[in-house]
Image (cartoon, rainbow, N blue to C red; front, side, top):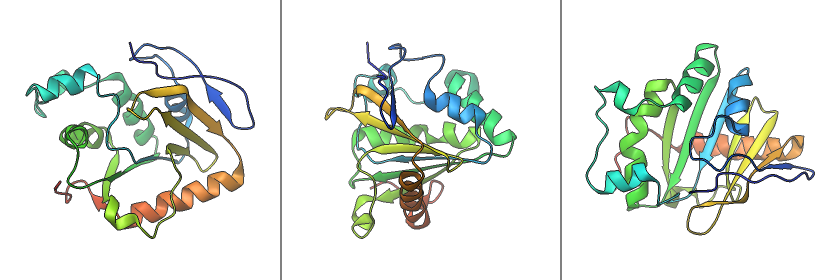
Length: 195
C-alpha cells in the first residue's frame, strides 16, 4: 500500500492523512473544492509511484478508451468539473525530460481525462528550462493564497510528510512567478508531441 501523505505542524504545515490510494479528502482536494479563481499544478518528475496498479496495467498494454467515459472517470475529476464550473481556472504544467520516460508516456496517454474535466495542460521539455528558476519540488497554488508542496522519495513514492502547506506570501509570489514562466513557454497538450 502506498503512503500518500504525512502531517506535522511547522511554519508551513505538513499533512499526514489517509494512506489509502483513493483518500476521500486531502489538502489538495479540499483546496480545489474551495478555490475561488485559480488552481495551478507544476509537475517536474519523470516518474511517480511506479507500483500504481493503473500504471502497471498500462505497461501491460491496457489503454483508456476516451469514448467509454465510465471506464476512466474517477472522483477527482468530479472535483475538477465542479471547480471549473464555478469559474476556477485550472492549469497543469509538466516539465519533462526527452525522450520521455515510460511513466510520462503513461501520463500523456491519460491526459485526455484531465482535459475532459476542464483542466488546461501544457508540457515543457526540460531542455527549454535552463534559464528558468523553478522550485525544487512539485506544487499546487490555489488563488495565489496557498501553496501545497508535494514531497516524493527518490523512487517516486510519497515521502513522509508528503505534503507541505504554505501561506507565506513571499513564497507564494515566487512560486507563482515560476509557474507563469513555465506556462508561458510550455506547449499546449493538443500540440505537444512526445519524443
